Length: 448
Image (tube, rainbow, N blue to C red; front, side):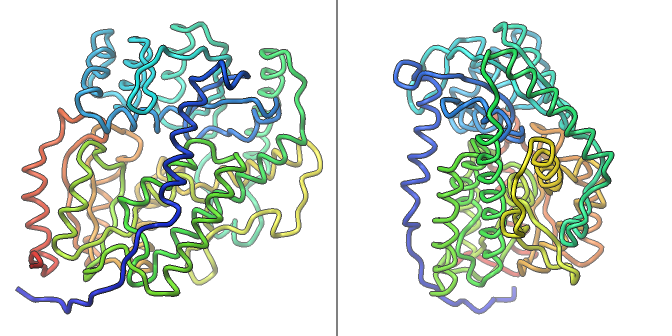
């Protein structure tokens, strides 16, 4: 077996780690604490356009669905109870695992707030987008069970060319206008449902926060091209999630600026996520949340996962330079563009919103393969691990085609079967054996 040269890098904890945990904790607590935080409460997916409802006022509290499902899935015993509750109400076992955890929690009237279970909070409205197969049906069930007013908008307008973003040419006007028209109808829905007057200026500020937070997260991911990697993927899970909770909030945008500065400083000082980094991988889909120890197991071989299409592209907004380099997309503010009126702002927002990398995966495996190949090349990756995730039909579209495309370019690829949010479909021992074999493929043995 070939032994790779081992360099020991300096490591240190993230200074903003505690702050990230505190933001996340307070987010879930505020949603449930109606006495101390009165106002409107609404629900939607982590991908929904949360800058728009911000026009209703500052006293809005949002619960995004997928991160909430993941927070349940982290506790295997609790999650099994929620999953079985949903299945007892005829929700099929092969549907989205997050959806089943979320619905089980709602049916049991047990909202998970950290280590406590409290009654499910009242919800004033649903504001939800449609691109994944379960998005709208998920919240239709919530609306019917809880009697919550609902609004849905479709963003399935086809793939977005990243080069077009770099050239600042925008998407075809008709596609953008299709989405903008739905949002204009949605603002009417928000006013009629809540009885409030919509404030465009408040929406503009929220849009600016979202432009900033999603561009900053992409820049943070780009900094991980450095050797040693300043951040490992397991740590990324604690940071990327803030964008999935409320990417349009000033709190999250400000935090990402602080995190970006810290990561840049780590790169400048040569601080690594793993002292014994000697090989780098990426992954593709959500991980099995109840079994994140697989990342620590790979570290025994000196392997660090520098990210994934999922952690990078779920909330990060990138652009592609003419030479193919992926980097953070330049915000409208940094291009000197001001938000002037409702339709102009919604058009800029739609152009930004629809360029998200994870949306492109729904339009063909070749798009995902191309993005993963660019990550392999630009993040100096030695191998790829693909999760054949039975818990999410969206992120695994074309996964085996991705494996073939990467293998054809000489990239070592490992696949394993599992489920991001259902521990009944994950075999830890079997996956460990597959990792051992993959490490041998990469020419690695366990470090002393």
